Structures are given as structure tokens and as C-alpha cells.
Image (cartoon, rainbow, N blue to C red):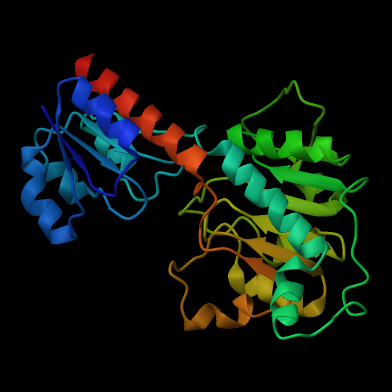
Amino acid sequence: MKILISDGIEDIGKKILLNAGFEVVDKKLSPEELLQQIPEYDAIIVRSATKVTKEVIDIGTKLKAIARGGVGLDNIDVAYAKSKGIPVLNTPGASAISVAELAIAHMFALCRFLHVSTSEMRNLKWPKKEYSKGIELTGKTLGIFGIGSIGKEVAKRAIGLGMNVIAYDPFVTTTDLNVKLTTQDEVLKQSDFISLHIPLDKKVGAAITKKEFDMMKNGVVLINCARGGVVSETDLLEALKSGKVAGAGIDVFVNEPTTESQKELLNHPNVSATPHIGASTNEAQERVGEEIATKVVNALKS
């Protein structure tokens, strides 16, 4: 059987597939090339770039598995694949630690002005007075939306830092962590920091809009290492301008790469921004490659 790796995985993943006796082709294809070549393959492994659409699935008549090395499945027509009896695989836990650490890093950056003081000091400025009013994470309340694999890792680290952690997740009713599960409204009202770890519901749109910002504490810090579009970027910018939101750590955006229309948000002094690198650590990528390859092997041999 033949497997296409369209967006690359770590060598350990390719070795697992080869050792299982599969033919492995690792190359980036354009959407047009993918449509031309997908009929040759029994499985496809993607990351976030390649789109596995209804058309790709229809043309890929040999497909027995579609795999995404990562958490989200926004670039795969999951419902249609399942309707065709094709399993859709991903690695929800492999990058959890890396994403969680980035979320915490954004909190630290915003609380101690790391994101702005570094660039100013490179210009031989000494902004000691300007950045003398930092705040500690210890003793603050962190609200987590989505207490799945990533949310749990964020909670563990926050508890270790002495934060009080509350969470809302409609699919979770109990937890073995020292986390208070409560309602969405209470998380919005009580939290000094809010970290989002929820999927994007394309039918509903942004989960955090002006309505939700209005419910938050004045001076809240918002972290989005989940998905672009989960937060209304327009409403976030207005909340930053008004001071309702004291800081925002953003790893994911509506448009990626970002465009001129997002420049004002990116240039706001109270924004700490990273280019969708939550899972981009050596350790996470090793785990992703190993896990997704193992799942594909099991799916094709079952």
C-alpha cells in the first residue's frame, strides 16, 4: 500500500511506516497536483497546509485513512470522509505540553512586558520606569475554556505557579486536577486570565465577541493558542483600545499568514504575538510523527 505525506512529518514517523512495509512518498503537492495524484494512494498524512476536501476524497477512491499530524481537523472534510467509511486520524495529545507552555509563556511576556522591552532595549533605550508595574501570576485566577489534553496541561502549570484555576468545558463533568468546573459565564466574570483551548465551530463563528468581552473583568488578559477565528479580532482590538483587555497573547489568526488588515492588532503594544508555533517544538514534533504513523499503520492493517 502507498502513503502520501503531503506536509512532512519527522523521520521517526516515516521509519515506522517503512518498517511496516508501506511505500511512502513524502512531497508537497499543490491542490491541482493532489487531485491528479491522490487516486494512487491508500492513505494521506497532512499537517495544516494541505486541504482534504470532498473533491479530494471522491477522487481518492483507494483511500483507507486520512491522517492529520496535529490537533485540529479544520482542513479535512471529516463528516464526508466518515460518510464514505474512511477513518480520520489525528494526534490531540502529542503537542499538548508544547502548546500549554506557549500559553504560559504569553502570560509571562504580557505580565512583565517581555514582548516590548526587548525591542526597545535593542535600540539602547532603558524603559525601566515604563515597565515597572508588572504583575505576578501567583494568586490570580486563570479561566480555561476547554479542559481537554491541552487545557489540562495549562492547568497543571498554572497550579504549579500558585494560580487559582477554573474551567468551562461542556463535555467534561469531573476532573482529577485542582480545578473548579463552572459555567461559561462564571469563567468570563471571575477570571484575571483566560486561556482558550477550544475548536472553532465554523457554523457558530467566534466564541469570544463583544458580548463575552463585556462580561469579563476590566484588565483581563486573554490567551488564544487554540484556533484563529475563535476570537473576533475586531472586537478584541476594540477591547484592547478601551483597556477592557489589558493584554492578549495570540498564536493563531483568522488569516495565516497575517495580512495588512491585521496590522493594527499585531502592532498594539499590549499584544504578544507568535506565528502559530504552539506545537512547534522538537519534542512535540517527534511525538506527533510517531503517533500519527502508528495510527495509520494500525488503521491500514486492521
